[in-house]
Image 1 (cartoon, one colour):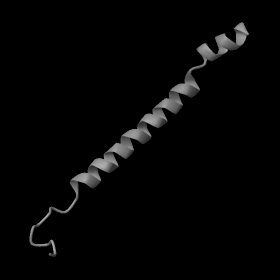
Image 2 (cartoon, one colour; image 1 turned 90 degrees about the vertical axis):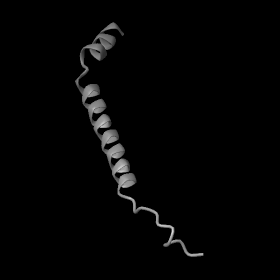
Image 3 (cartoon, helix red, strand yellow; image 1 turned 180 degrees about the horizontal axis):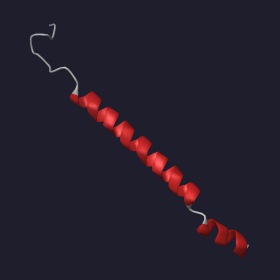
Length: 50
């Protein structure tokens, strides 16, 4: 039991890589959403059909 706990604490490489990949994916998604929000067409009052 103690050996398993020591191994989990000493081997952080896999967890660090997974967290880094997750953070990169989250930042990419936020960037895509912000880009989509900023590239929207401006609303014209004349373009709205009544």
